Length: 171
Ligand code: SF4
Image (cartoon, rainbow, N blue to C red; front, side, top):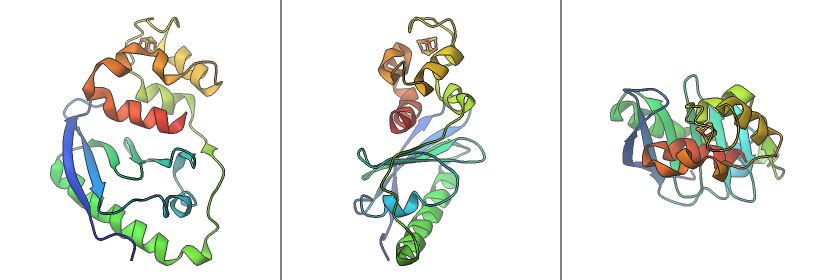
C-alpha cells in the first residue's frame, strides 16, 4: 500500500460550472514516486515529470495531482469530493501494488484538445492577453506561442485557482 489517506483540506466555488465546487485534497505522503506509474493510466491529458504534475479528464471537469495536493473540479458537494478522494486513494494504491507490471512514464505527455484548454480559461474574451478570443489564446497555448501567465484574469481571482493549476500542469 502506498497511501493511507487523502484528506479533504479545502473547497472553492467552481466558476467553470456555477453551483459546483472544487475540492482540494492532501495525501498523507508525497506522490512523487507513484506519479510515473499513474501516468500509464487512461484519461491522461497532461503529465509533466519535471514538475511532478498529472492531469486526468473526468466525465465533467478535471483531476490534477501534484506531489502534495490534488484538485478535483466540478463536484456537486463535499461528500462527492470525499468519495472521489477515497476512490483516488484506492486507485493509487492499486497502481502502486501493480507497478512491476507497468512501465513508468518518464517523458512528458501532452494531449489536450483546444476545447479542453478553452474550458479552463475564463471564457470572457476580454482581450487582455492580446488575442481576440479565449479560444485563440487556447490555440496559442497549444502551439507554445503563449504562456498561461499572459492571461491576467486567470491570476487575479482565487476562484480560478483550479483552472490555473490545471493549465500550469498542462503547459
Ligand atoms: S486574457 Fe484570458 S480571459 Fe481574456 S481573452 Fe485572453 S485568455 Fe480570455
